[in-house]
Length: 291
Image (cartoon, rainbow, N blue to C red; front, side, top):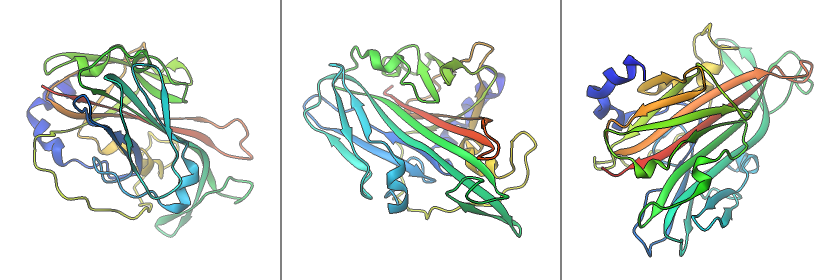
């Protein structure tokens, strides 16, 4: 683990108020005691850790949420309204995996003064634009009662970009290390930056404040394919960062109990430049550490 992350130990408390400050997709699924429903909240926006209503114009972009229990059974929750909170009733005890997927969508932009104008289109539909074919995915590990066997937690789900942990994070505690691999199109993503955020669940939490979906203007970053990606890469504002190693693995020291979120983004050239410029994939992985 890089020295920059280890040196952040003393500033972990500051993460409680850290916001992603950009559109991102994540899941809040707090562990519950046996016999209680598993509460699932899909977060899409810029108000981490709080969710917010899903705009009507975006609902069709989401596949149904999936909740997979230790019995390997899957429950789906369609995203067909502003609803972003769901309940898995009578959940089996043990560990759970919940996933969310934002399906591939074209987004293009053109300069408009000092800002950018955005459209949900490709270059053929909007000539002269810069185009991104975007996906987002999120998954969270949780449990009912106590953690238990769930192979789904340590297996790839097949999305274009994802975190795959070696063990169920709920089996870890403060002082342990979570080893996790970042896969891009099924292959380890070497030497790649990962954003890390954490919320102390025992600390007082501010009331929900909803944000309108919009796009900001950011100065150019020469490390990105396009200056507008500085807004799209939400992890740029994460309080801590680190990089995968040459094998695409990240060794994350568990510095504090609470809700953790790992974030990554990756862009690759689009095959037909007449249609679009890049594939842009974003992913998050959430888990809770009890003690």
